[in-house]
Image 1 (cartoon, rainbow, N blue to C red):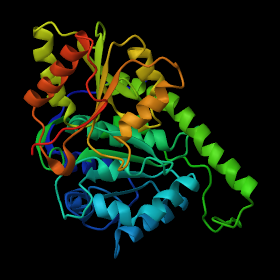
Image 2 (image 1 turned 60 degrees about the vertical axis):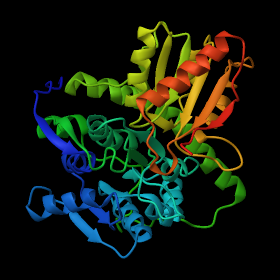
Image 3 (image 1 turned 180 degrees about the vertical axis):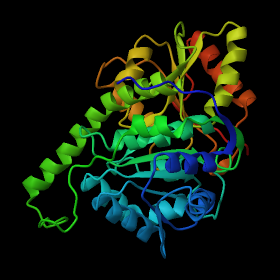
Image 4 (image 1 turned 45 degrees about the vertical axis):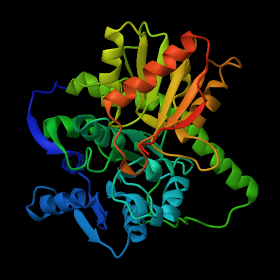
Length: 398
């Protein structure tokens, strides 16, 4: 039976409230929570929904973020659609369980409201906490605005619970920039979400009905095979993410392009790569540059795991220059997205275009569209003159 299409219903929501509403509309059964700025209002709003009888779920109040993800995992293993959220040091405190959940191949969804890792103590956002998790076996999506964040959370359950995947999903949004900023969000009808998302699926359930052990000691060869299975599931996830995006668009009227979203890429000869809310500022800069005749386009990364190397190469294979903006740094090396992009491109070609890495916005430092405009323009002007700027640049205000 074909799904009915969505009718319009607009609400003004902060990014955090958009996450909470999406989890509610996914009909989560269990929420395990521990407060941390700037995430707290997500689980506060979910607790409100439960208290008012709008969400039939169990709220587990725990003593730490480590326990929050452990409880979420336990509920999910038992068959519940489970959700949690955290930020920064809370995510670091969870880190053991972040690995455990993916290794156990249990569908779980977690929102990460990004915040700089201390010290010094800092409540402003960059991508350091989120990108610190890129080797943990989680699928990792990141939104540009509150509408996309809302849609991503609902889609995350569908992706995580697909039998070809059975991996947990974390969805990122910048603290305060999105988390506490109100924007119009189109909210779907509950019955359509129910029909589109369907009942929970997972590979196995521990319910006491039959003996099943989890987390036993394994031989090296068995462990290696399990890790290889996660890698295979990541490759399958690329297909699933695209399918879910297409299906969501057919029903709810919004699709984003799957793993990446392109802006003015069709005739671009130079490309910018970015992730997150500041992509909107980069779009403003690109519009100005286009008016001045610069053939520039933006590739916005929506999923950093699995990394969209094939999609990026398909667009930039003949690029005359690429600028990767990173809002995190892999100390002693370069920006994490840049490193993934260069490594991924080398899977497809040995002849790379000039690729520049600009690390900026660390610690919540604001980067304006005028500054993006200047960096992009100066890079293209230099390349057109046959001069390559330094491959690595840390753009800072002092």
